[in-house]
Amino acid sequence: MRNLTLPLLFLILLLSSPAVLAEKSRTNKNFVIPLPININQASADTLDLALDGIGAKKAQAIVDYRELHGPFASVEDLANVKGIGAGTLERNLGRITVD
Image (cartoon, rainbow, N blue to C red; front, side):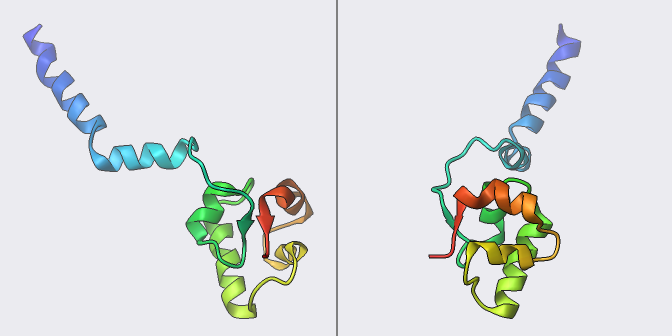
């Protein structure tokens, strides 16, 4: 029994560390983000978490495109961002706005 105490304590401490908890919350998408998301104002992190088929790189590409070309005039303009096709746009139409 004593041989198990130290490894068990170590495991508990490891799993309760902030870095592990932050990583778990990042992969576990059980959170609330009000929809629709304004793609002219949202951060890359918000876009990454809220949109279907949009990961960190595509989310950053959206922000970079917006900063380079100005605000999106329509939701459909999101397809101008490299790596975002018609399917991704269609899956997210109800989730995004430009208002």
